[in-house]
Image (tube, rainbow, N blue to C red):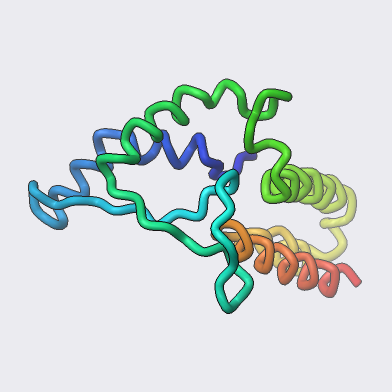
Length: 149
């Protein structure tokens, strides 16, 4: 079980297939800009309480993405600069929560397969990054609690 963290996003954007997709869809001279809210670079909040994003040109992000992609070995270690962030903690906790759900499903599913299909499908609704993901996780946890209630 994995989540898409900064290291994985960097790897995906460094992939040659990504550049080829951009060129195929927008032409060979297309430029890329990234709108990011880096967790280690506070940018304030917008009217919804979400982190403000800043625009970064693709040429400026390429070296940063290359560095981040090479740093993936730090993931989950005490040296991981992102590991302490509340979003990473939430994602690790979600994995533990889902593993517990799976164990419970194995023990109880024979009695009510339809309900457990719904329970086990619900976490697929946890998507996005930052506050979007946190809101989705809260909603899904409530749905699962109602189904199991």
